Image (cartoon, rainbow, N blue to C red; front, side, top):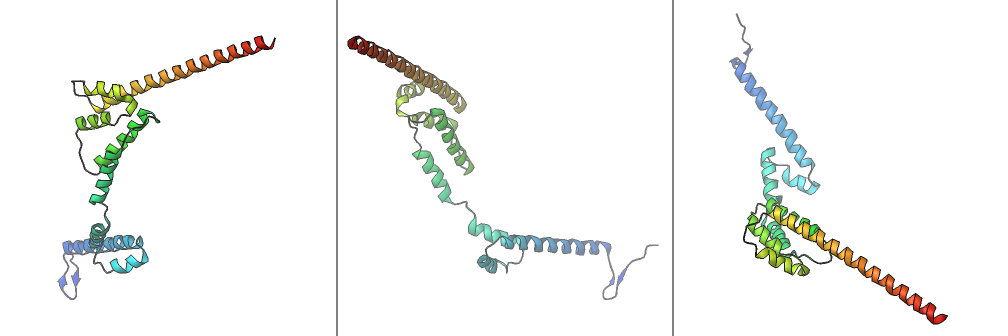
Length: 192
């Protein structure tokens, strides 16, 4: 035969009721710890303002309403960054494409969606002035292009342009050496 505990004030104690009381006590303790953990992170002036909050949830919601950075200002900043972005000739196009991709990532992080065809068209439009011919070539392509495909084409074109630039510089140096040698030969001829 099971013995039941009795509470002198209210009579027999139900085991389910004991479990409920223990659960509530555990919740109160956890809530107390959580609330004070949050309050501990606040500045002293804010501590006095928020310490009267009833529980951790009310405190958290109040702080979230007041300080959460989900405002239109950050969205406007990212959009402004996107619109102002222009590629320049002094940097490699690929490094600038990476900057552009970071801006697109920030836009996506703000919950705004830009279609891939828009991203491709925007990237083509933002190419530097010396890429005018390549830009026109890309604009006249009939087939829709994915952003990844465009980046591959830009990387190839950028590499080709870098190689051509190195070859031109090498050719200029070679001409300079020939002219210098010719001048030395003339100087020796005149001096003799």
